[in-house]
Amino acid sequence: MNLLRTLVVSTAIACFTFAGVAGAGTLDDVKRKGFVQCGVSQGLPGFSNPDEKGNWTGIDVDICRAVAAAIFGDASKVKYTPLSAKERFTALQSGEVDVLSRNTTWTLVRDTALGLNFTGVTYYDGQGFMVPKKLGVKSAKELNGASVCVNIGTTTELNMADFFRANKMEYKPVVFEKADEVVAAYDAGRCDVYTTDRSGLAAQRLKLKNPDAHMVLPEIISKEPLGPVVRHGDDQWFDLVKWTLYAMLEAEEYGLNSKNVDKMKSSSDPVVKRLLGIEGDMGKNLGVDNNWVYNIVKQVGNYSEVYDRNVGPATPLKLERGANALWKEGGLQYGMPVR
Image (cartoon, rainbow, N blue to C red; front, top):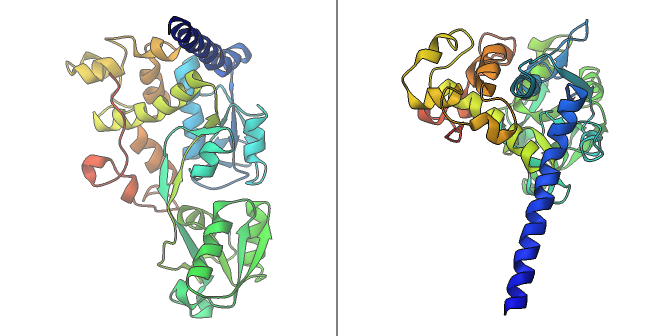
């Protein structure tokens, strides 16, 4: 009995030691090299998209900027690696990127079999279909026999197969590796339908020669919770990326934004004091300075600021908050307590 107890304790200590070493890996590497290597899309307006000068913007980009702000106090300390859907997981697994922030759907297989961890949901989405208005199609149930353009290596492919099978319809997949290839093929009339996440349809529609000639059908055929991804076995890095998102949500909930964050340092609210590092050691518990949330909010903004400037109603995408509203406002976004 004593021997068994000794083995159990020894194993627990060994596991704890290993976890501590593994957990320090990526954060220490990032601090040493001086920037976060962020895996992004090859160009999706509103999420991760470069301009003509190579400056990246979007929700996914802002997540990486927020992580950099938390670590360095400087949101600009990020380098971006554009990745196709097919190569994104390999790039993360191999260490080519520190975090994958690329409109990626959280699924059981990806969260277990690929050696990856999803750190939260930055955008609750669902898959849809876009068609030329001239086809006269009003519902996805009318797509029997259609040719459908789609990205290879995505949940989109699998959801499409499930949808047509469940509805006893035939279809012809027209697959491409790069998103821009899918858009170009659809715009050239090489397929009848384009399918991807509905936020992606709103973004890619802007690239078409005549956006107003196309419409998104009403059906939503899947759940697509999109969020950042890190490698298994690095709990400290996992915690930091995860709590970066939660901090942005908590900041919105408690009225902190980039314009008032300095003034809010004098707040008497204990939650605000913890968020801004005036009380407690929240940052130190993550391996960063206690002003980590202040730096995130000051330089990047809270969640609503990030959403509104990238995909909100005042942007070309014109996406309402919907499911991405805070839980208090009927949405699904719920920041865990920073305490």
